[in-house]
Length: 347
Ligand SMILES: [Zn+2]
Image 1 (cartoon, rainbow, N blue to C red):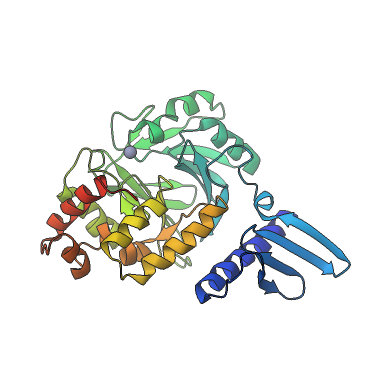
Image 2 (image 1 turned 120 degrees about the horizontal axis):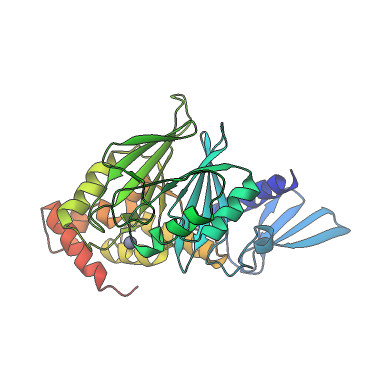
């Protein structure tokens, strides 16, 4: 109860802070920049909440501690994202990876995406009192699939189904292909085959079964689609990445939340700005992401619609992007040239 009240205060502060930032109302880093009724103010630099129920009774709360930040040496805070019918818990791992615990609100059944740190996954599952039944693996690279076997070994509460599209994935027992479907409790999962970064890469689109759901769910994109960028073409071609980003993922509804495999937003957005220096949405997202990272908050999720507006690899049809790649007119050629340039780009 208390923690949800705090979360709601923190979320409110954060959105006000972001809004204030974009309005240009942040001038002094020390001066209070937002005021919430008579009680709460926040200063940008230290992200410290000052809460006073009356002028004589004041207490200072460290904004970061409030949100259980990095005492465990993680690259980002643990955050929850509530969507129609489900909750997505963002779990940081390694240097910049993200794992995700997807919880079906109706049944409390859960699935985990790319559980490279099984200890944190098990701890979170126990704390949340949910039933973990499935592992969704995006691709075989160690920093995504490397925890599968250990998790299966440590998991003593029933059999785990391990999904993936590549025989190189550890503990794989449910191989999937394009358009395969399964469930997480009452949630629907649709598999999108997106070869290029690796030949067996799968993205998972998860949505509430209820047709009247208030949103279009979430897509877990591994190392195919990042915020503002895409994965390297280790085992594929520009045609394949074009098919993945501009045909399959672009076909999802614009409000679909995008949860990618790494915290690479600032580096990717720096390249996006280099490609389209006049795109204001890119500049705004950079400013927002800097604020988020200053307090070690994750920058995920974005949405498919947002990626179409700022991700150069999803904008290979745009004349601004084609001009940047030497007036190419073929979007696949544009894709290839962009990736080559990004491979050598220093943010
Ligand atoms: Zn990878």
